[in-house]
Length: 282
Image (cartoon, rainbow, N blue to C red; front, side):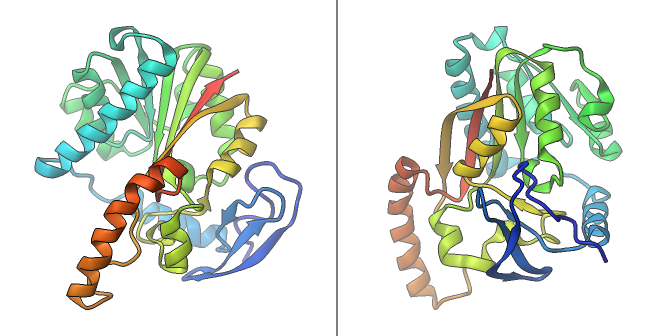
């Protein structure tokens, strides 16, 4: 069967070489020019994993989960406001891959004019019933006018894309001049990834419904340059070296305390496992 990737999705004309990171779908491949990591699975395998994920039910966050999500997304919106030099009420924002619209809801409550787009009929139906402005389909199918939005968010989307260049070019088209694109994904240059190697949870294609492409701040600079963007801010968080159950309880708790202290340094050095990267349209 044909492999999903035969070249770097960031537009490099360099070979993809095998790495020593062996996951369920085979060894990961690395672009010899920019260092982007990609799956070695076939297109058929990817389509099956993606299909199973997109047909599953999507829940609405509640309790502590909602509180954590609201805190994280409120910080992102604050960064967007500062980088745009605009008040919340003056910002039109689109969430691509919105699912049932939890981010759209948070943004609306903070005073932004927010809407979302997602290809899942079940998720869109759920969000619309909650009174949210959501569009069914892929971004290019909706056909927004040029320069519609001040900002666009892509949370946990980039790692699913065989062709990130096409999506980012469409985002650039519908952003206003100097508009912002915020991408949230895993960071392959994180301490967590380097320690956990093939056990890093972002590498689990089946668990996450199609994680196939893995970024770092450096590889995003390459992708941004090819799609009309400049990287203006990088923010990372989270350090985790072991999961509960992998070590004796006392040792696990001790290492967890150490990693919580390392979180502060990881944020300063962009070595956190979770990454938010802000791109400005040229």
